[in-house]
Image 1 (tube, rainbow, N blue to C red):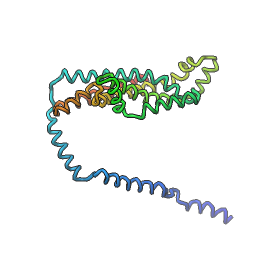
Image 2: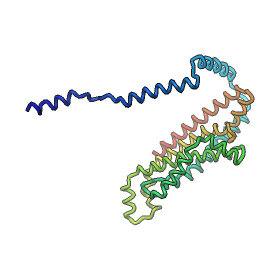
Image 3: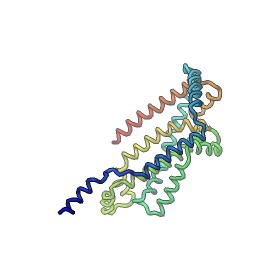
Image 4: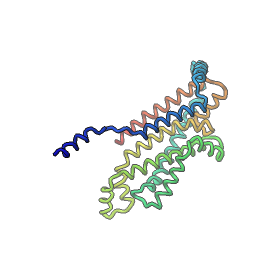
Length: 267
């Protein structure tokens, strides 16, 4: 009796939250390395204060925004919007079969592994780097920006689409297969209803992302409002730069509102 009674008492005396010394040492090492890396980059308080002063002067040169050059501004915004829409449509259309081939619950390993390698390659580089390569290949203009954003769309949409397919319930797939339906009918009747809402959400998010990225690829020669912004910086037209930035923010916010409406419509 005494031995049996002492066991619960001993168990209650144990610390329910033991100290994880490995995690603590890891955090200490991370903080120490952060300070070491900051010392290498000369991140000092004096530079920060000087930067604030320079930033205030730069903002002062941007105010007030230039309410002119509407033709140049509207042309750049329209081109960025067209680049984003074209890249999203083509990228999503190409990413659908690639994502399907990468789904491990529907495809054999000899198909999924090379497909996932292709997706990883598309995701390996930032759209700006891809845009630079396409600018060298096809020249300056919207075509380079479209091709760069298509690659980015394939890498993002195909990966998420494959993961969405892998998370579906296979009971519906087996039920449709039991009726003698072919592979295409299985996709339409069993897979598509389970992933359609998420796929619409992925596509609208990619459109938002392409709207933002169209500005960055334009800076390196991919067309759109980014080219207009880069030209304004080169000419020191900082008041026009502020106007462009305000228009870019407005365009992205409108795109976010529209994409939210689309997602609600398919929920």
